[in-house]
Length: 259
Image 1: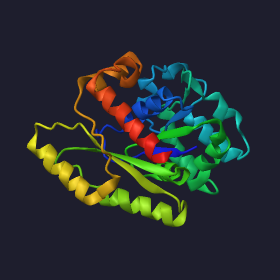
Image 2: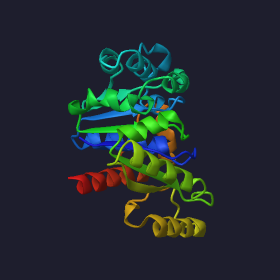
Image 3: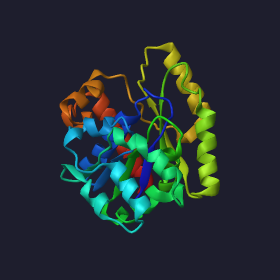
Image 4: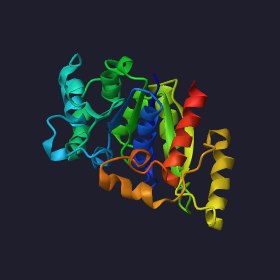
């Protein structure tokens, strides 16, 4: 049962859109899937129509409880909100912003999330983690807990800016905490074939990452932006839209290559 995270410290690159649609696409393909919203902004949580104000538990509680008692499992199970027959969600709220200070003083602070997932990993075919747009201790936990990384990259001028920092962080985590970690997919998002700059940036990214770049590209598509307002991913709300069909194609590509 693979654990993949969606990571890019740059905001606005389609990270959460990728996380929620890949997780939902896996579920639509019959895979029992867990999406964990690891971003204090809680956009993935909102994207599934989950009302944050009514939550009894969130990822913050999972982390706080595990720091206090490494054997606890109650909080992890209590945060699971069913978003479909085969999809569960661990939601996030702004409280998660307070997780870093808690983690900072914890023994084994980089492995708290890995410990949490080890207790529920066997319950799922796939676990997808939506990382925050930063490279702090929470993201280190995410990388330490994951088998592989999806890096969404917007096809625009600044796409490769900050990439070296991300790559360095992945390499450090791989060397010191998680030897099996790899970058599995680089996904080109907001792709507009009519734009010459898009093609130039895409070529640059493919030259840099080679075969790690997904064959499927995610086009600019208004339905991808509209779907969260309906409380559902585009692959569920607008399954015939160009954005949704692209994400389902990406999911098929991922399943095919990990089979």
